[in-house]
Image 1 (cartoon, rainbow, N blue to C red):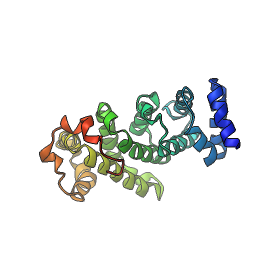
Image 2 (spheres, helix red, strand yellow):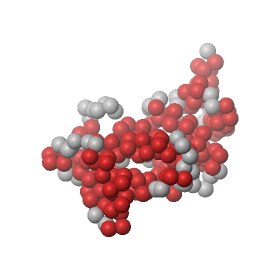
Image 3 (spheres, rainbow, N blue to C red):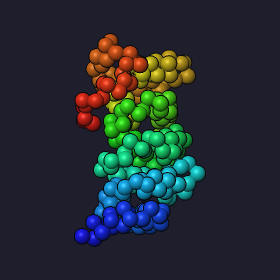
Image 4 (cartoon, rainbow, N blue to C red):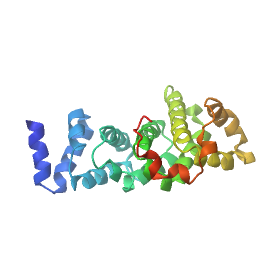
Length: 231
C-alpha cells in the first residue's frame, strides 16, 4: 500500500525534490525497495533520476559517492524500466565510459564495468555510435597494470574484462576484431596482446559473422528484432 501511494505521488508531482530525496535515502541506506521504486518512476522523473545519478558518476564527482551511484544505476538497469532506452541517450552513459577510461581505483572501475556488461545486450541497436569509446575502455583496461590492486579486486577486474570481451566479440565480431587488429598490430602493444588479449581470443571459437556479415550489417536493427538479451 505504501509503495502504491509513493508511486501515486510520482505521478501527481513533477517536482525534482521527490526523486532527489529518494535517491539520497537510497544512497545512504542501500535500500533495495527504494531502488525498485526508483526503477518504476514515470516521465519526467526518469530524467531527473538520471541527472541526479550522473552528478555522482561524472569524473569530477566525489569518489565516495561514485560507487553507490553506480550500484543504484546497475540495480535500475537490471529491473529494465520502460525508459531504459533513454540511458544511452543521457550524459550518464557518456560519463560512465569516460570514467572507465580514466579511473584508477579498482572498485569504481569494477562497478562501472559490470554495469556496462549488463547494459550492452539490452540496448544493442544504440551502441554503434559508442563503439570507439567502448573499444577504448577495453584497450585501456587490457593494458592497465593491475598488479598493485588489492586481492581480490585484481582477479575480479580480469574476469569482468573477459566478460566485456565476450559481449563485444559475441555481438559485434566484425567491428571488434577490426579494432583488435588495428590496435594490436602496433609494436607498442604486442606485450599487451600476448599477455592479455591473445588468451581471450584463444578461448572462443571463430564467430560465423566474421564470414557472413560486415561491420555495417552487424549493426543493422533488423538483426536484433527477434532476439532476447540472453541471445
